[in-house]
Length: 104
Image (tube, rainbow, N blue to C red; front, side, top):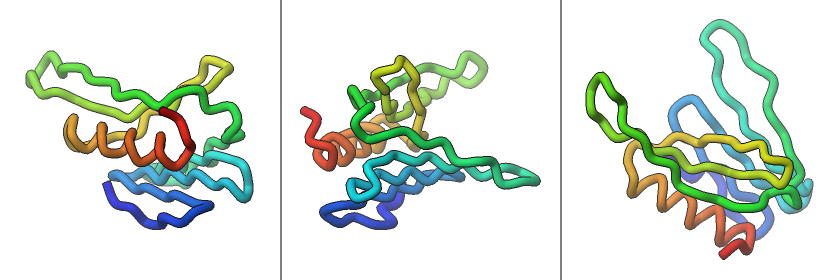
């Protein structure tokens, strides 16, 4: 995970081919993923709809490797998974997002 931008009004995180932007000025969250041959349309949601930030962990059955994501859960039941290299990174991402949004 890379912190591309961190100000009072904007937090931009990058992980692999995904970029997550939380923008208080625009009052929206945006998740942009890189496509293989094309650039997919970014997903956007109002920041006011974010209900919680959690860490989701699962184990890949074939390799036995733990896979962790930071989950951005919205009031309408939708959720975005923001990838992480390990559990510690997913927890750090969640902490940054919660602090930025004032969720505790």
